[in-house]
Image 1 (spheres, rainbow, N blue to C red):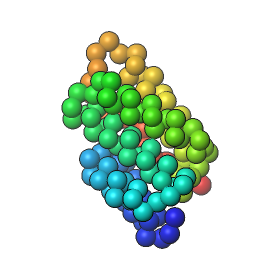
Image 2: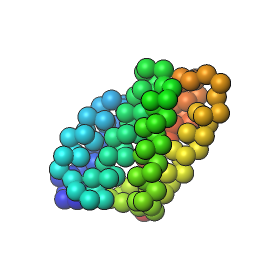
Image 3: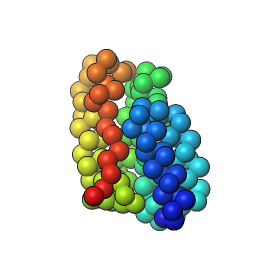
Image 4: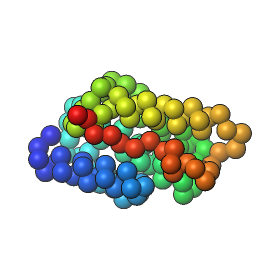
Length: 125
C-alpha cells in the first residue's frame, strides 16, 4: 500500500472509530478500487463492517448486519494477526464477540450501550 492509500485507510479507520460508519464506508469503497491482494481483502472487510454498523445503528440491524459481520470475519481470519497497519487479529476477536452478543438477543436492533460495545479498528504495533 503506497503512502496515499495508507493515508486514506487511516482516514477511514479514524472515521469508523468515531462512529461515522457511513462516511468511512464511502472512504473504504473508494480505496478498494485502488487496492489488490491482501490490501483489497482488508479494505473489503472494513467496508463490510462499517456498512453492517451503519445498518445496525440506523436501520434496525437484524440479519443483514449480522451477515455482513460474518462475511468480514471470514476475510479477517485469513489476514491475522496484522495487515497494512491494522491489528486484524484483535479486530477479529472484537467483532466475533460482538456478533455473539447480537446473536444472543431476542430482538434485533441497537441498544443503549451498543456504541460502547462496538468493535474499534485497532492499529498494529
